[in-house]
Image (cartoon, rainbow, N blue to C red; front, top):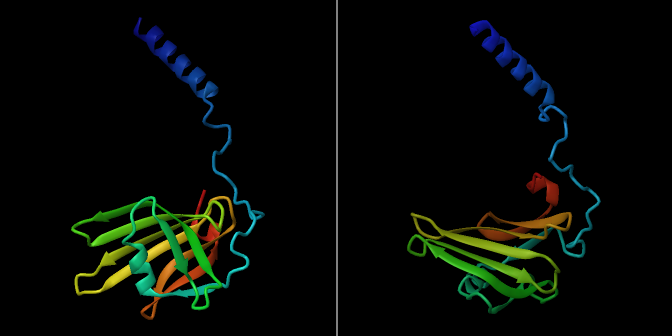
Length: 157
């Protein structure tokens, strides 16, 4: 009786293994689409921002309009409205997300983090998931700079 039970268990295991669909090779991973249109092709590869302008934007509340001048001559602007705003850890971390009206589908997210030794560090992105380019906010030599990157250099699908 024990041998029959063992034989049936082995037979069931073999049938389950044969019928298993996990071995088919269909992968849900998306291949990069390098033919995505470029949303920011008319903008330079490097845009220097003023910290005063960024700090002013971080004080806005959801629903308020936002107009960020990326250049002194106002030729490069980000216009939109505040989608969300959050402050955490006794206002040591402030984050804001803006939806663009002049770059369709793009959002600008900026985070300011208070340093223990004083001052702030900044990070953020200007991105549209439907397009092949984006900007990443970095601090370089004490200045805030938006650096243009390819979508798939930063995002893995």
